[in-house]
Each structure stands twice: as structure tokens, then as C-alpha cells.
Image (cartoon, rainbow, N blue to C red; front, side, top):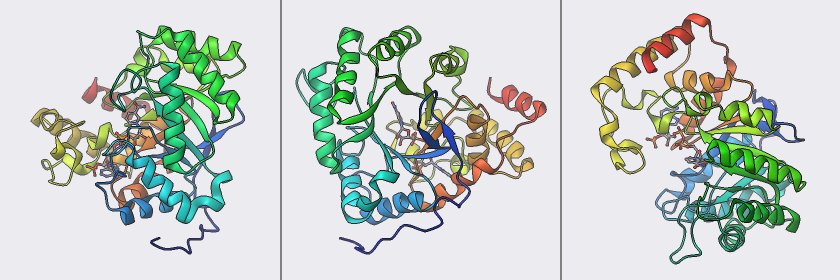
Length: 333
Ligand SMILES: NC(=O)c1ccc[n+]([C@@H]2O[C@H](COP(=O)([O-])OP(=O)(O)OC[C@H]3O[C@@H](n4cnc5c(N)ncnc54)[C@H](OP(=O)(O)O)[C@@H]3O)[C@@H](O)[C@H]2O)c1
């Protein structure tokens, strides 16, 4: 145990964090949530992971987003989170909204991937063990699986909620037609979809362009955004090249060759607009997503407490003038 005497800040709900209602549900989520995709696995220092998670909780971030395969290695972000639950956060469980997901490859063979009832049930059991939890607040189908009847995937979500292992169900990365089916099926089985989780940022507009944001709203579902900083591209990280300790340097989920000279030029121009707003580029990018009230929350990744601190300040100004919108669109559309 690193520090057995953690006591959460008494002012955690007075630090300026704001909360938005999640669709037509009883749940409120912080405008900024913390995601554990890449920086909390067994290759990351446990003390740093703990510092980031506890800093989040001490400042009103009560929603933590996980999935079975977050790490690296797979499963290890959930194990890290379980360690911190046990050593520090257990007394605060009822103040926390914790998610996990299954849908991408997790273990070998035909039952460790995609959308079968068999995979979803066994994966959630494994996740609960790693996170040392009795239940998660929301369990997601992590992606649409065209090879499994959607009724099977959705009924698994319904039954998982009925079993008490998750309080709510959600979908992630669903195309429009499959999402429409999911919303209807879940609603008709008394388990309304709480959230659709999708990638959305200044550089990636599909949810808006393809009507997925409007669709969630029309179906009474919340909408939660991942990679709001385009994995760090929409920050000052790459304005002068690719730092050795950055995600792009790892050349895995964010490819080095996506940081082109043209991209850097556009980022520099975006940075000027941010400066005029009195924000860093990261803060403006998060504010840009949050300007749409149909967005419930942005899930940020952070590799340091400093990054998280910066990101939390974004919510101070989420209003954009028509001219700012026009300039941003001109640079990125
Ligand atoms: N449902 C899905 O399919 C799905 C997919 C992807 C992600 N997600 C969820 O969404 C979460 C966020 O995704 P993401 O990590 O791609 O989000 P992101 O916030 O767009 O990118 C996070 C990265 O940006 C950099 N960064 C963050 N704040 C910064 C700042 N203030 N200044 C400079 N750099 C900064 C860091 O990069 P460095 O590491 O280089 O420092 C950090 O690792 C994940 O953790 C996960 O929970 C879900």
C-alpha cells in the first residue's frame, strides 16, 4: 500500500466542476471525466496513476471510464484501478460512477471478442474481479458486431443490468442504424440506453455530420465523448515536433506520420485562436466539444496531474463566437 491514509478533499464538489444530466435519466456526470485507456496499465508507474486518479476525485471528477482491454497490458488498467479502490477509494464507492466495456479482442479463442452473450457475461465477471467491485455503474457493448444478432448483444446488456452487476447499459462506436435498434430494444426491455460513447473532436466530426449526436438526444440517451483531444494532437504537445515521451512517439494508436507539417501548421493557427480566448489549445479543444449541450461529458486521458489540471480548467469558458467557430471550421473542415 502506497499511502494508507488517503482522505478525499472536503472541497471536492466546490472546486468548480460542473455536472450535466445524462439524457433523460437520473444520472448527472461531471463535464470532464477521466479515462484509463493508455496511461494506467502495468507499464505506467503506480504512484503516477494513483496521483492522477486521486487528483481527479479530489476535484469533482467522479466518473472513471474503463474497459476490459485498457492497459497496456490488457486488463491491467482495471487491476490498477482495483488496487486504488482497495487502498484509497473504497469509502467513496457510492460517490463514484465507474464504467467498463467489452467488445474488442480480450482473450484468445472464439469467446474473447465481439458481441456474444458468452463474451459479455464472462468479461464483466473478470472486470469486476480486477477492479475489486461488486458492480459497475455502466456496462457498454464496446462496438457493434455485425456477426452476432443484435438482439443477443442487447439482451445480454438487459440481463446484466437485471443481475445487478451493472446499474445501467450503454453502447459505444455503434453506427446509426444499429444504434437505433439498440435504443429501441433497450427501451422496450426497461433498460434504457444511458450513454452512447463515441469519438468526437475538432478534427473528427462524424457524430455531428452523421446525426449520431442528434440521434442520442432524440432517444433520451446521454452522449459521452472519447479522444476529445484527438489523443493529444489538439494540445501543445506536437507544436514543435514529436516529444519522446508522447503517445505519437509510441506509434501505436496515434501514428507518427499523422503529425504532418500541414497538421502542425493548422495546430499553430488553432493555438492562436485559443490564446485569444485566454485558453490553451487543449482547453479550447475540450470547450469546443462541451459547447454542445447534447454532450454529457468529455472523457480525457492524461499522462500527468498537470495535464489533468489544465484540462479541468476548460469548463470555465465553453461559449464560442460565430467568428471563432468560422475560423476553426476554416482550418479543420
Ligand atoms: N469507447 C471507445 O472505443 C474508446 C476509444 C478510445 C478512448 N476511449 C476512452 O476515452 C478516454 C480518453 O481517450 P484518449 O486518451 O484518446 O483522450 P484524449 O484526451 O484525446 O488524449 C489523451 C492524451 O492527450 C495528451 N494530453 C491530455 N491532456 C493534455 C494536456 N493538457 N496537454 C498536453 N497533452 C495532453 C496525453 O498524451 P501523452 O500521453 O502524449 O502525454 C494524453 O495521453 C480513454 O481513456 C478511454 O476511457 C474510449
